[in-house]
Length: 287
Image (cartoon, rainbow, N blue to C red):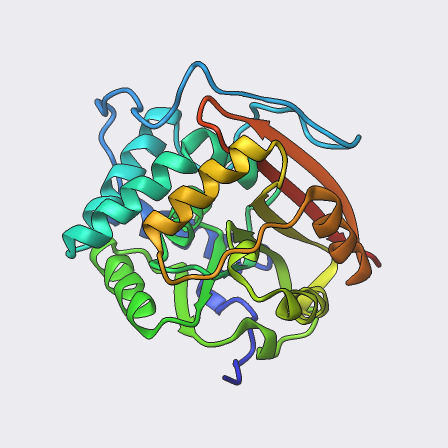
């Protein structure tokens, strides 16, 4: 697929005009995601979850993603996103995904994303994380890309039901899109281990080219160690998507692949009460 320019539409380009930022915030406040001040306590976090930074230079752990909303408001956003999908099986899938990547983890990842400008969600699937990051920072314009026509259609319907305008979805192969130097940030959440190994390097090079100078690519994936956690993750992957191939990369392997594509790389490992070997790679485009 050939993609059109990824430059943010005028209504979402708040970095160029404060008036547009105000409009974007108004759109979100008027959408069905605007929760009341009496929203209940978040159900998506866990006091037993801990994190640690690896490789120097990472922001302090536990900081938030920026943007709008208290913790309880963000938990309400997650619940409403899940309810926006009309297929009960898809709704259950989204619940599991938000259970694995809970609000705390999403905000850990989101702290590395700019609060304004164009952001790419590679392998967006049903679009649940695109919706979350669009709502929590209304000055962003999040564009989700996925190979599945069905998933893209469902993501568009969910965005429409929620009244979210600073998000868009396109079906296609991210290795072929255009838009050099136009994207402020991109992210892939648990995607790399589902990509054929020979396709990873071309994809990383393409993402490097589309980012603006000092633009950032956030990759959340799983490490190959310890082995017990890897096998737990593999089992869940196969339960959720039995026909999808899985090939996990060690932290050193994926870090080397990102550096070979032209990125400066830091790692941010997160410990979880669930047996997942979570790793975040913060890959910055070299000037």
